[in-house]
Image (cartoon, rainbow, N blue to C red):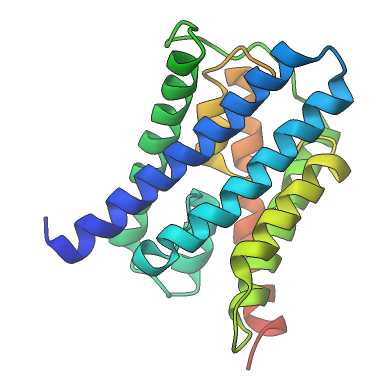
Length: 218
C-alpha cells in the first residue's frame, strides 16, 4: 500500500481507537468512583469532548480526522473523498474502535471480550441518534466552510453538549456504536440495539448531505 494512503489509514484507526478507549475507559472510571449517574455521565461527556479536540488537532492534517463512518460517508457523497478510499477509512475506523474497547477493558482489568448489556432502543432513541449525527455533521461542515476553521473545538463542545440533550447519549458514530456494543460497562449498548443506532446515523448522513451542500455553499 502506498505511503500516502497508509498514513491516513493508520491515523483513522489510531484516532478511533483512542476515542473509544477514552469513552469506554472514562465510563468505567466514573462508574467506579461514583454511584451518581448524572455525575458519571458528566465525567464521561467531558472526557469524550476533550479527547475529540485533541485527536482532531493531532490527526486532522494527516487524514482529516473523521474517526466516523457516517462522516466519511458524507464526504464521499460530496465527492470530497473517493469511494474506495472511503471504504478503507471505514474499515480502519471499525477496527480501531474495536481495539479501543479491548484496550479500555485491558487497562481496567476487565475481560477483553465482552458484550454490551445496556438497553438503548425505541423510536425516541433512534430519533435522538439521527439528531445527534445531524448536529455533528452540521458542526463539521459549517466550521470547514470558514476561512479559519475551529472544527476541533466546535466538535468537542458539540459532543459534550449532545451527551446531555439527546435521549441516546449521542453516539453519532457507527464505529463507536459497534465498539460500545462490545462492553458491558457504563457506556455500552446491546448489539441488537447498536444495529438500529448505526442505521439512524447513516440515514442522517445520507439525508443531510444535499442540505449541507446548499446551506454552506460559498
